[in-house]
Length: 67
Image (cartoon, rainbow, N blue to C red; front, side, top):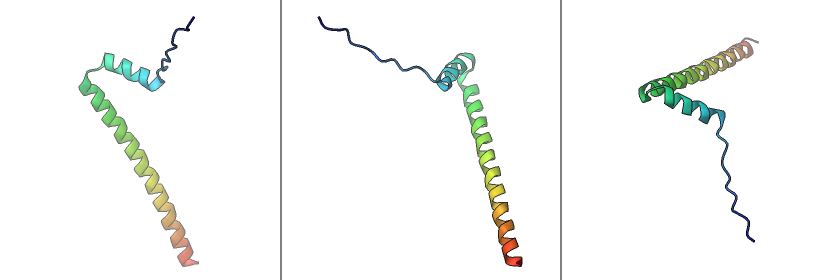
């Protein structure tokens, strides 16, 4: 007797589940706007981190030069 083939079904991630709910609740334009807004937030955070790092480097360079 041959065993029945086993099918592996991927369990959706939390992100996939949230996107599915989002697609049911919002029109595509709203989804695009929300994703664009989140991308902007992430870009702003990255730029802020870069500014802080640049400021730290400049302050260290100034402290080294005056010593």
